[in-house]
Length: 334
Image (cartoon, rainbow, N blue to C red; front, top):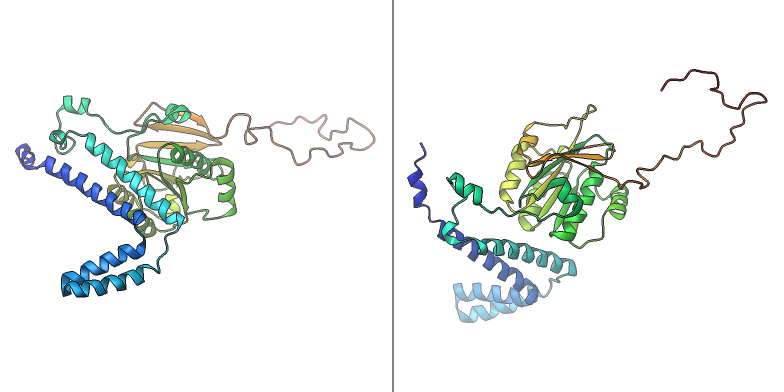
């Protein structure tokens, strides 16, 4: 049985300080990767290890070997950009931790009074414009589930949302498991997404590949299109969120012919926001605002315009008599 007095033994201030120290160390290590060439870092590393185990002369030899090995490694501009993105994410996490009063660092662990819970300030994304009206201000690390039948517009909605997030809030990884690096994905990116250096695409098709990528990179937002195709279970989804608590996940679900999402109801229970896309219209219900509706395609765009009929422009004359309309005089019902 839980004894509330046991919670008093947890040193929340020490845990809070340890988190801050760990982030600072990680930021310094990442900054060093940019500031110093691989050859210098390798020389220092090899030299330190050799000196520690075999003495100062071995340390010099180790440094020379390390310098030669490190000289073979070249850092590309993409490598630098990825490291800079990691630094920025960790700096944001550090800034949030430093704003917390260490004396109250444990207030979201264990038990809180109703008054403390009511007054607690949660980190949230300050959405603007149509995304604010559509979704409110989701908490950091939110989970949104998007579903709809094929060709309903769910992937295009996610592409638009990814563009907004990358342009306003940080790094985004879009896992296009179903489409891969195909021509159809390229078309969506050109039409609905900017060439934003914060927006990355991947073609992972298995959970383990995703898990490894997130362990080695820091993304603020991850889109999984789709969960069904990648065969990610609700248990795996909970695990990946627990391993990446600062990352928001937007998961795409396939739908059945009657419009219901495929898979266990656990997916919906675990999500903060549920979005159903039908015929280009997104219907949202979630924890951060009242139910809302939004067009996926702008009103009056080519996707909403009157269709161009295949028989347009053909000669409609039909024989020598009558109006030329073969359906005249028939009672047609549609």
